[in-house]
Amino acid sequence: MPKRGPEFEPAFHAGGRLPRLLLSGKNRGKNCKRPLDCLLTVVYDVPQLPRERIMYLYLDYRSGEPIYRQIVEAVKYKVASGQLADDERLPSIRAMAEELKINTRTVVKAYEELQHAGLVVMRHGQGVFVAANHGGASESVRRKAIGQMARRMLAEAFRLGADKDEVLKIIQSEADKMGSEP
Image (cartoon, rainbow, N blue to C red):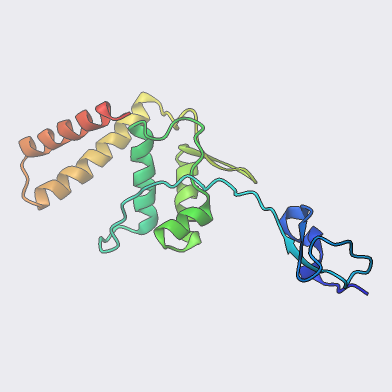
């Protein structure tokens, strides 16, 4: 009677693929009439799945900004600079968490915030994709949001000792970099 169990059932391995059987031992290459006359080695041919695309992000664990916010800002930057194209798939939650060595819940929170902002679309069972419209807003909403960001940035820059001209030069330099990136 052949042994039973998950380790002996090909249907439980490699997504139900049939195994390739190799004869080994003293009866290799001979006809085997009974099951135990030949020792069998089971080798499963599992195709290599393509590795998931890795997204390189810089996270500063010592800053006061939460990790999920840093992920959100990094993805926003990559979308705005064209490094992430429309309908491009982002790394899975698990893959990003493993790569960044953080909890999966942190990545979920970042992806949910990006979805709420209209930058990404989460498709059940398929993954997370960059939204085609990037969450475009009306001119009045856009001006209000940019004004709030500018006030926060200026307050922080002035706290660090920068003057208005220095801040404007830095903004122009960063805008030039984003415009020249693919």
